[in-house]
Image (cartoon, rainbow, N blue to C red; front, side, top):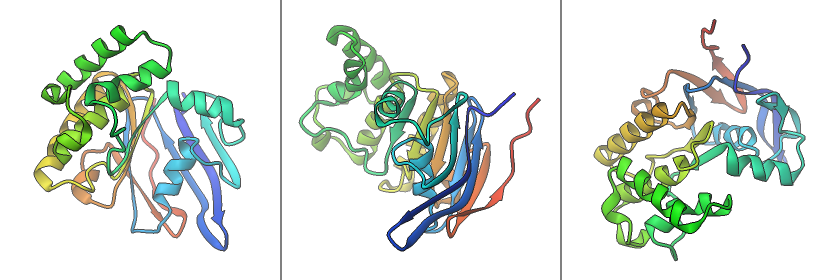
Length: 227
């Protein structure tokens, strides 16, 4: 067997700043891997390279047998829409849309009819226990509710990999715990792997294993035991 997603010898610089300096990574279907490290260590850059948001200067990112590090922009964008989901620290919901419309948006972009997309979106809002926010806009809900809406939006397409960058960083501990329980629980139900970037040990505790990044290098990386 081979990993679902892996990165090898990844290097990335921004001007004179080295963000990644030979970092490596791998994750298997349905696995939750926490990427830890201090601020500026390169963990978010690693996530962005693995997700195809940016391209590394060198190294490989292999997903489902394909090197997405060298993939043209069009196919990489399509891959992010169909196979990947994203949750960021501040949710990044579209403020002009209702929460229901936000969750339905990935389906609409994939060509799903509005009625079908909104029906599925409503089901996901219910699964994330935030169905009462359906008709509200992001500015009308609490931070914890908004982040659960963002999780619903990320999972509505049933992605193979979910990338979560400090998903509880803007929340109080109680709201953060609720978001993480729902995020991990619902992702496990649909066998979605999670790349979880965090600097908080209590958040990393939800993972199956941890990877530590420092100064752009993967300094602690223990591959999962697989048959």
